[in-house]
Amino acid sequence: MSLWAPTVVSYIGELILFICLAVGLWALVHCALQRTDAFSAIGTLSKAMWLAILAGTMLLAVILSALGQLFTLMSLTASLVYLLDIRPALRDITSGGSNW
Image (cartoon, rainbow, N blue to C red):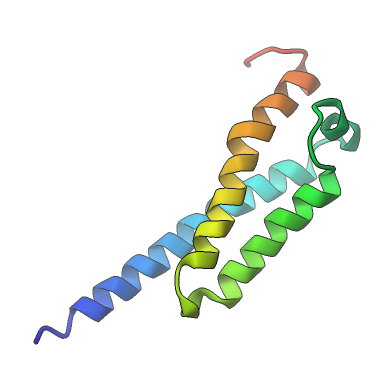
């Protein structure tokens, strides 16, 4: 019986958690720096709600990471939805549609 497999699985889980937290922190900081009225202009949830979702899922991922990867993946999903859907719309509103 090999004893290194649980260690490798543990390291992979920690790597996934680290990536999730890095992406989540990026999304959280970006969200915090945006204007409040821009969120209503693009027709999405309020800035406070996005901050609560991003911070809450990150907190759950850290606290409950020992139970498995479910909350880590939920946090990563929330962060990616923000970064890939909301962030480009906010960028278009705040910069006048420029890609730069």
